[in-house]
Image (cartoon, rainbow, N blue to C red):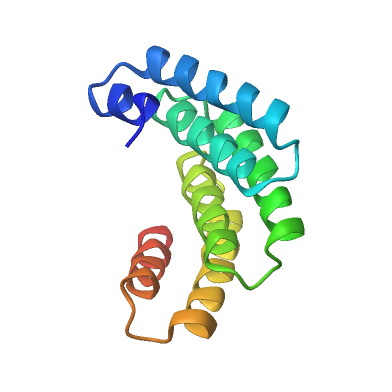
Length: 133
């Protein structure tokens, strides 16, 4: 794990957010704005913000992660699917169930193509869609 992840697990979301922001600053300096590690940092920030109830900030962070992953990995990569799923989770928490369903369906389509119908990530996507419906 990492410090931000451990702090979030302990319920210290402010500390986790600070740690993830420090990691993002380093990745931006070392790798630049369009690198997989930078995308992961945006996603980590989005996850912490969502746990803090800052859904607008979480959505923005996950959208940044998705944009990087689309550019770096393309539209049919499992990491891209993760961002679609994260966006779907945040949109559902915001009450945008139509948008959440669309995002989860994008994640599911990627997982079906990449992993097939009997992979745990595919199952998770089915569950996320069920949670929105």
